Length: 227
Image (cartoon, rainbow, N blue to C red):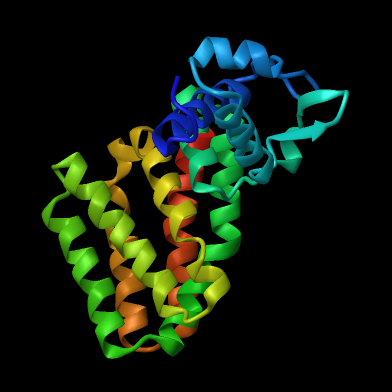
């Protein structure tokens, strides 16, 4: 049995995380006791405790002495945690969660685009435009298309020069991966909106960047709502 190996801990965290977001156990339910988890995963108690600590830091579980480890209510989870988004996708993301993510992006990203239009350096403006060009070029290659789409949105966040928005890198990256299977069929139809965002940022037009990003996200959100 291996003690605190990071790979062992990560494996336990991922397995339990996917199960929890999938409803097993449901919010309020108890995780198996430490000895049962040790036996199941063939790891030491130290690995189990470290895994539970990580899950607790992500808001998924609470630990109380003599009461065990219980799943916290869903609204208390760290929904912008990259790992959590990945686990939700792996467990079979629900339509309600897809729409919740789309709604959050509609709140955050238009204002990020507006800030980018006024704060981006020339290098950052070029990075946004280059990512858009890659989206157009690779629109028929799903793997390359999603990579370019991520690069576009992350470049916009970078260009805000706001550390809070920049810290959303991991969440946006994971979120785009999670929803791409649902939106790949309409990817090409949203290219013009991406181009409008890039063009507005290039000419330092904050209002136009905001409106173009809003149109971009509305296009995706409306598709998810009616699919």
